[in-house]
Every structure is written in structure tokens, then in C-alpha cells.
Amino acid sequence: MVEALNVLLGCDVDPDRPRYGGARYDTRDDQLTWRSISEGIQLLQQVLDGIGIQAGVKPKVIFCLRADTQMRDIYGDAAWPITKYADLWRSLEQDGHELAWHPHLWRWSNESGCWYQETEDENWISECLETGHAGFTKALGKTPVTCHMGWTFHNNVSMRRISELGLRVDFSGCPGVFFGGGPGSAGTVFDNKIDWLGTPLRWYRPSEVDYRRPAGGGEAGLSVVEIPKFTTRSGVLRKVKGLAARGKRAPGTGAATAAFLQITSLPMLYSRVIAERLACREADPFFATYFHPDELLADRPRSAKNFLYSLANLEKNVKGLVRAARQDGREVSFVTGAEALEYMVGGTRNSGV
Ligand SMILES: [Zn+2]
Image 1 (tube, rainbow, N blue to C red):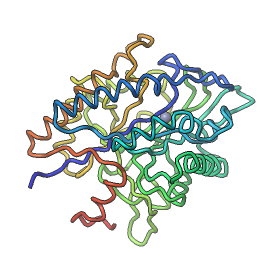
Image 2: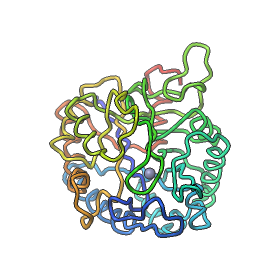
Image 3: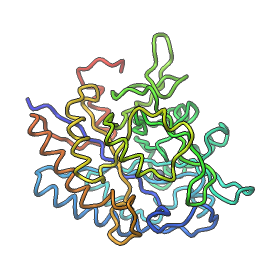
């Protein structure tokens, strides 16, 4: 039997980010633009069809949709992007893609006049997640199965809360990635706080006292399953990623032991990630990754950072992954969160499920 490599291909459906021509974080009212959806996802669909024909396996995408208090504060509807583009989401779902949840903990500060990443205020974080979850559920008539958090951030409060809200799968984890958070060049006083130090590459049920690792002897584990994304230990790739993250640099970044590369990255770099993943049995049977649809836009401001990511790269990398896996005697299978869960429940590996 050919061994499967189950790929979770996430797409964080955010508004166009400032470096792709979107609104800065120091604008309160609706100046957000969504070419990410209106153009990016259409381009993506064409490429996915092409890959299906050429590689013999059509990628299934986990579309992670925004529903949170920032959307409510700006549009008066916590699930505005879901409601606004409802027909598109339903047709994507009919094509086999998953509609998942992508909450951002963006909080408005009157004092600083900007949005910032809330990481401390437990009541606020709970309320943001409850509001977003209720909005998602109302807009689509069902609860989300899978979650990918904004900035890939979690703390113990957010991980516990999504588990209590009934999320089954989270793939926010980025083993070894650490950013201390700080001011950004696009108008925020604080964002990009991420801490996945000590997180294993294998999937796990998070400990209640430390979301970054599995529950240990005697500790209570949460019901949500964490499927961490694959991160690279390669020094070269970490250096490249460090250059791409210019402007996101913050105290403590040096503590990171690994880096995450989007699947929209340059193929000459990403092929190393693929090779590293295929050699890593710990992460089996999953390969979780993600990208943003604004990275797919052809017409965008030029900069080295934007040059790193593109639609053409995504296409080459997905085909490269399918090919490299076959050479390794494995067949890529693109899965939704629910399908990943079935594997875990029905799988032979004993990991405490
Ligand atoms: Zn996001």
C-alpha cells in the first residue's frame, strides 16, 4: 500500500495587507480592500484546476475566513467577509474545499489611533473569539471544524476557548517559531507576537497549562487537536525568512529555533522545505502549511518581500511536492480538518486519541 502524505493547505483570507496595497493599521473606518478575494481566489481556482489535470491530484484548500470583533467594529457584522462573498464560499465548499475560521485578535486603541494585537486581556480575547464564532456560525449555518489563528498566535486562553467553542482541529502551530511582537511599519503599535517554542512537529492534544505542547502525565488535555505546520530548521532558510520579515523584527526573535515558509515562496527555497519534510517522520502523516491570497495578485507594489511570494511559486511548489512525495514512494492527499481527524481516530498510531 502506498503511504499517504496528508496535506493541509490553508488559505488565510484576510483583507489586502498594507504591503500588498491594502489599508494601514492606523485607519479605523472601512478602508479595507479585498482584492485578495475578488481577484486572488479566482486566480487560485484556475491554478488548482491546472494542477489537477497535470499532477493528477486536485488540491483541496482550507479557506480560513475572517470572523472576529475587528470585522464587527468595521462592518457591523462579525462575519462580514463570509456574508458578503457567501456565493463564492458555498461554491468552493461544493468543490470539496473546507470553510474554516481565521480570527484575528485586532483591537482598536483610541490612545494610539491604531489596531494592535491583543495578547494579554483574557476577557477581551474570549469575547473576540465568541463573537467571531457566533458570526461564522450564523453566516454559514454551521460551526467551524478547523481554526487557523491570526499571526498563528495562540496563548492558553485562546487555545482553551476555541476548544470549548467546539473547534476540532487547529493548525496555527509553528514549531520553534518565536517573535516577541512590537510596532510595525504599517501603523500598528504592536503585532506579530508568536510563541511556539518547544512545540513538537507531530500532532497533539494541547495541555491546558501550555498550549505549545501535548498534555503530559496526569495533565488535562484539551479536546481540540493541534496539527502544527511544518517548520524548517535549515539555517539558510531561517536567514532568508529573517530578511523577508524585516520590519517585523522584535525583541527576543533570536530565541526562535525554526522558521515557517509559506508555500507561495520561491521554489528554489521551498524545494528544501519539501525535502526536509519528506525526511521527517515525526510530522507524519501530515504536512500542514498555508498562504495568503494577496500573495497571488499579479499587480502589486514591488519590493523584495513581495517578490518572495507568488501564484506561480504556489503552482510550482504544489507540483514539486506531489512529485517529490511520489519519488519517495508516497502519494499526496489534500485533506480537510474533518478528514485529518478521521485519520487520527481511525489511524493505527497511538497518540492518546
Ligand atoms: Zn490573518
